[in-house]
Image 1 (tube, one colour):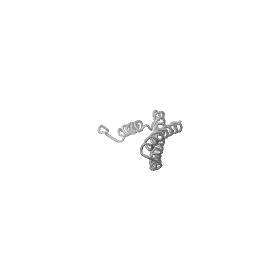
Image 2 (cartoon, helix red, strand yellow):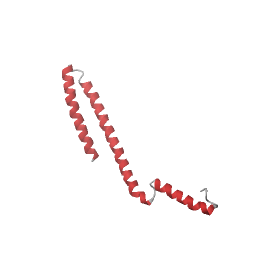
Image 3 (tube, helix red, strand yellow):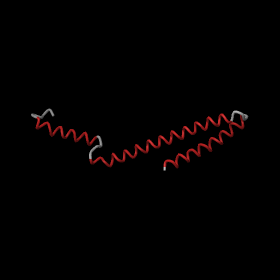
Image 4 (tube, one colour):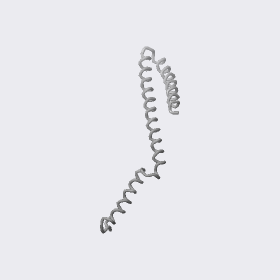
Length: 102
């Protein structure tokens, strides 16, 4: 731009600059495939995050319910049943999570 002597010299440089911006921002025709792939990838990331959030919320709720239901039992029964119930529930939740992803 510094070498431009008049407006006619400046216009092609500006046009080249704008074309560069469009290309680098993945808005050009040559970038359509990449842009579409990125949108699909971002959508998958958001779905995964949503499913993971639901999984962790379910595990947290299960832990609370297990602690509340086990207060009446003695210590040995409570710890052994909590571990076995927790493992089963986590395995079940993980299976549901994986099924919902497909």
